[in-house]
Amino acid sequence: MPTPKYQVHTQFATTALESKWGPILTDAQLKKWIKAACQLPFEFTLRLVNAKEGLVLNQMYRGEDHATNILTFSLNELSSDLAKETVTADLVFCMPVIEKEAKAQGKQINHHFIHLLIHGVLHAQGFDHEDPIEAQAMETLEIAILRRLKLENPYI
View 1 (cartoon, one colour):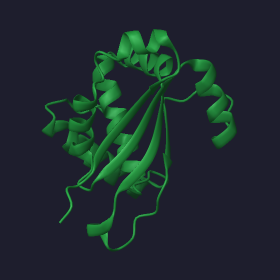
View 2 (tube, rainbow, N blue to C red):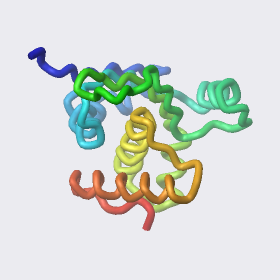
View 3 (tube, rainbow, N blue to C red):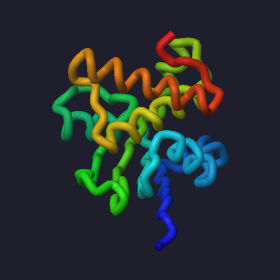
């Protein structure tokens, strides 16, 4: 039986973002957080962007005229035979938005980032929050995962 694949590729849109976040967001740390939310093998590309790129991507893919904190691009549809599946997705994090949100909510920036990473990983696995029942289920799962990582409930 082949060894499960756990891959993370991190891209920084600018050298300033890489200087600030590269030392904190190591592959080992990112894999640990992703594994907490994804029980399947995975391959994720994480791109950390500035507000300008965040705005362009949100306009292109969601038709919204503002940068958003995270965009998830799932690159596969999971089948019923999960034993053979690898979750593959691109996650785009707009760091100025994340920093602004964390400050406004009185949260540590790295904790807010981890929450959004978990959120994006769940989206990549097909979870959604389009209706109240789905939203409650997804939030409950996020809270449980964050608790296992010894982080507090982000919705309080």
